[in-house]
Image (cartoon, rainbow, N blue to C red; front, side):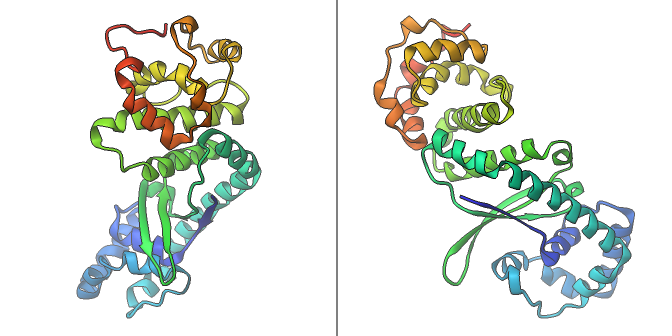
Length: 281
């Protein structure tokens, strides 16, 4: 897989026009454009997918609104802010890409698709994912902009990977999505993050999933290929103790990829998820 971090003027401008106003200046500009070009403004609302499809060489039928936005002083400030945001991602991805991809391959045992990440001003606080059918292939795109990313770009990369993985396994029926989501957290928010940081963060994530994660954890260690003796070490490392002797060692799990492991947990949930007896202390 690969992540491509892109600043595209038309995608940025479209989101400024049709998402919430992040500054008084943008709000004022939008009101002015609405009064002067109402019909065209309304027509642009359905243009997002076309912009994404032809992102590299998109040419609007009528560029009056886009030209007015682009020439405004407030847009230049927003664009500069978004460029700094993009540079933070590019620098972090360049730093961690090799390590992330090697560990993802080891943890997931599947190949994720390449995604174009179109970055917008983080003050928009939006995440949208689309599959755009192009001339020769389907392109997976994410429109991404969140203020909390500015605190820690490495954590933001993990959030993007979590989002991608959740999208790629979204075919699971609703009744099983909690199990799938718990395993995504184990994979990205816990195991991958632990490897990158050099210390355990296995208690990080959605607290509502903690029960599921704790119940799945012994089988997760087997899936990662650890021996019984190694499992004792990792339960101490991750502060997730359990009675190892109560768990039969499932040797075949280390040969599973993530999809097969999720299917295993769903298929065997009656004895993995002991609702009335919390096995892990």
